[in-house]
Length: 192
Image (cartoon, rainbow, N blue to C red; front, top):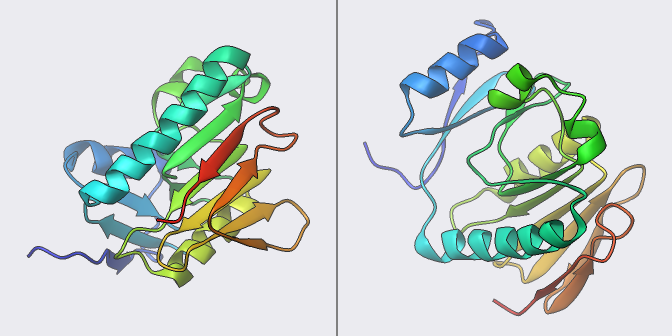
């Protein structure tokens, strides 16, 4: 069955351990899997070319900034993070400050690291549910995210998430600041 919507399975009563989830991902390497803190297993379809290109561009901009500053580690959408609330999530773009990354053991760094990124970008693709992305962003915030951008080309806006602050909505085009989390980083967004 080919679908453009994620398949969502309720696995709450099964209770996969972090190691079991890791093994499930390893034996199903062609599938993009995430587990929510509520115990839902998301089996996500691949993104289309436009979304994939936008993700790559955002990741490249962050990598270039990070190579210059050497302040942390940048991760692609293939990286799954085990969040403190139990969710296992894969943002489209993620960044973790060096001092936090270095607290993890080499084994923790190798698998699905038990840490919430300091910064994430989620890019809404044509088939993404906005309500599910809102839940995902809230899950990051509840796990310690310092700054997050939900970029929504369909609604021509960006939702900015910060700890202990109300969500800010900015229309496109705009230029986003990494604020104190990513000092000196800016991302210019056109109208898509």
